[in-house]
Image (tube, rainbow, N blue to C red; front, top):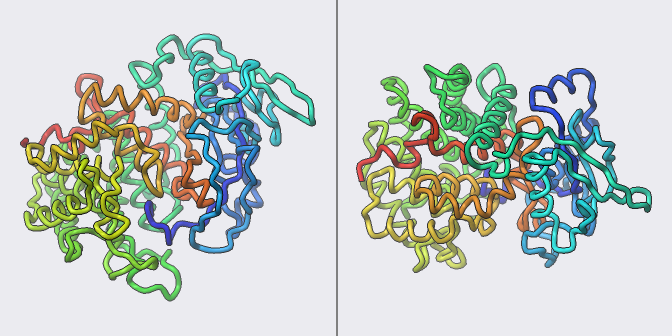
Length: 529
């Protein structure tokens, strides 16, 4: 599960940055693919034969936005394709571009029928610039700017490509969305991007209401179903009404069935300390609690009460939380505060839904989070040496959202966390293990804080959201400094549902149309302050 260094599969990054713009909607793209447009190594840079080999790792590639291509940094050595261990390992590499992006991208994956493929971009092409301007200071911002301009105005992006030693221009066409796409996180553009993501999630939901297993077996399946459910709720549907009411109901049933199911993905011979089921309980409390904000359901509330009681029972003596019951995990530690903070958020949801929350458990968890924090209010990894005082936005945002949901907003410690969140709302690169998790938690907290925090968040994160988009409506993962060093990316392991649902949650967290949708429970709108 996210933030588990021991249990995530080793993922070797191997990608290339590709550019081209697509002249078709997600539904048109789906039709093209049905007519035989062949995807090349999409989405993880692997051929069909490689993708079916359990010893081959998914590649951690840069997505190139709506052109439908992924790439690797052509100036970096590509990681080995075969996994040699179930654990992550660091590779000495001090190279850093300050998150400006590579200066040369080699194409490793193409989405069938998408603009890049239609424009003639090929696997192995090296993208060195855009519009005759080289990526001397990194490709991320120039690429995002070109994509935004093309979608809002020109309809084309011209890629400067090296192929067989010669530089050529590849003109990629993108369907123009109108001037509103100059600000893709607002208004009609935001609504269209969100709608495409919600449709993609619906199309990929399985018959049982869940999604295919990725990282964490049943734990991961439950977590992804919860995130998809939250995304559909944010988009304005409920279990009783709206376009995705059936999808939400199926997700609810899957989650309730999966809460206590045995996880068969646990390694053979592993002890109780490999149990990571607290993750599924935490995310289930977020989803089911938010669902109960949309209508009364005594049976579902009883289930949420059982979850809240179980979370209280699983609390460590310290007040913190580990991956699951069973003592120290395979890396020799117990508590990690990203999980404790998510539990705090989930309990906040449960309280707003009318559940009874054990005050001693909240007080102990709050004290543990505070003991781990620095003077600035940033929640640390844990309270041990080398962990205390190492605050980051994801842990602090989740803990603050939970405290607000529990009606503790006026508490001095909660106010201190709020100050940290306001000051660091876009500092997602200081997170750990899952970049997407920190993007999501910071984004929800920004919505809860209001327009100033939201503006600060999107000033930085609009670029990443633009690059994450794919022509089929999904939003994809990206490499970052930790995944490049560790040659493993939890977001890749969790898969496209994880990233697509997470971005959809951020885009839809605050209702914008007739007060429908949004995530009022998680944002603390219904709590007594």
